[in-house]
Amino acid sequence: MPVQSPSLLEPPRASVAQPPSGADGHGKSRSRRKDPLWARLTVILGAALMMTSGVAIVGSKAVISQATGSISQQNLLGGAGKTSAEGGSDLKGPIDMLLLGVDARERWAADDVRADSIIVLHIPATHDQAYLISIPRDTEARIPAFEQTRYPGGVGKINAAFQAGAQNGGGWEGGAQLMAQTLKAMTGVSFDGAAIINFGGFKNVIDALGSVRICPKQDVTSIHMSYVDGKPMWNADAKKTGKPRTPVVHKKGCQEMEGWAALDFSRQRYGLKNSDYDRQQNQQQLIKAMAKKATQDGSLTNPVKLNQLVKAAGKAFILDTGGVPVEDFVFTMRGVTGNELIMLKTNGGTYNAKGNGTEALSEQTLEMFQAIRKDELAEFVFHNPEVISSRK
Image (tube, rainbow, N blue to C red):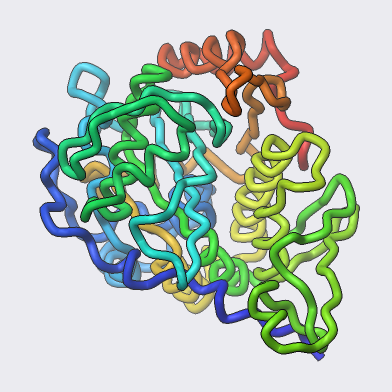
């Protein structure tokens, strides 16, 4: 009997679908969202761009716009978007995007969620390569004041920036804006776009793909889920059944994972050799696996399959595309494929403690972000190959 997916892996719809009031109170004029944009990018990695794989696009521009209407468009960058001097919405130069993974559950309030996955996606001006760089969730950051939610500013773990921006009516849009501003102040990187990825919603995308190939480096016992009568359930729900529970263990070695299993694996950090750093790499591995699966099994050239993927993506992502039409972006990015997605490590892949429960970005990591600003990341990686993740 096939394993059934637990219902609580669905995203909190109210928080995703409903933008907060005063959505444009960010104090800086930006291009308004046009018709649905960058859809092909969102399907496989929450705007992580690998959908522009050189595969022929299915249908007309009107068909694409219609198919992507369910994807929520919000202003996620506020004042952290690229200025005209930095290239603005010109796709001729390098493209930098902020991807925020929100591990939300239906029973959690929308304004009480932290972004535990913070990823910078960099695409050089050559548009033939893409890099994923994860920011450690415990990095100490100076979070700027945020008038929209009456947050006075302060110093804390960087993942708290999302929560501070989301409270008092800011919603996930406000959370993303404050996170983007915090990162810009810390790294100097401005962004062309952003996406909030509800990791619960990722399950639907993976299920639309069928499965993804994941390669755990060690046996990983889930701290979130157990089997009850052969079905995976959240531990809190499993306990309520009063029935015997069997731990969910993700075995070492390459394997095809269903949506619920891949998602649960990507959430684990306890028991891993390098804790959150291994989790970062596992989440990057999941994103790349989704990209490769979507581009290798004909999903992007099959109208029915593509429609299923886009529909699933609409429940998983919130986008800010800066007003760039999807057709322009697709053609700009047609040289990038899942195979050109390189995963990079911060802080050498280990905890860089400051001694107060937080950590700092290492000198090498700060140099990496400087290379991003100068669009010299390829050269930096060539001279510092140890920053490349060994994950498949």
